[in-house]
Image (cartoon, rainbow, N blue to C red):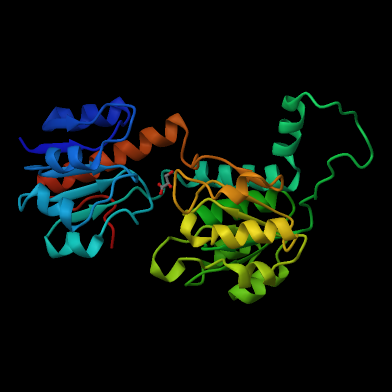
Length: 319
Ligand code: DGY
């Protein structure tokens, strides 16, 4: 029996899988585990099942000890894990691609509708008790049909978002490190362009690339200025890909029409200037937040940890 440390609450189905084979020490409080508590709990762990709120860095890996074999992240993004530090210590790192694709694309599209159709503004207005009545020019938004969606990062989630855009009658352009499969591109009618062209032609820009040093502030003041003043920016990937302070200025000055954010630069903090703006929809990192998806993510993370502990190749290692 190995010792598995789970750094936060995960669905029972995944915990039971782990418990069937190993001794499991799971943090079950609603509040996140504190750093000191985490450092002491991981000592002697053979596997760590981690949430994206926990930093898996050299200090933590060393606190775990040389017997540690695997860090199984319950997230597709793994910017919380120092992968080279894991590799140096012969620790396998894994993530959960695929299982949250549709849920995250749903939230991206939800934010597209929230921002272009001003749903948050409408909701706030009704709840404020302010008088209102139907009017020809009341809370007018922008339609999507015939407009162009620009997708930055055309992996699974980007493609699933493109599929939704097609159903809404939108054209799709994308910027990606590599060309997508030609039959998928044909099915989606998606054309690969560079970032400059994407920013210039898109009515909605949706960010779906991974976060790392190369994508930090990929969207800053210069890129926002390159967008149409009628365009919207959506981010469901990672907060620091967008320079939040620059975005707040662009939204305030009308450089772009609006934005929808599910992720933030310093989560759970949100840049205070964004909070005062009507033309930005803000939701608290809900991309994968469905019962089905969270269960699938945790189960896949458990399968990854169990595979490595058995000496097998895990289903979804980070490469
Ligand atoms: C992920 O898996 O990276 C998501 O951000 C979780 O919601």
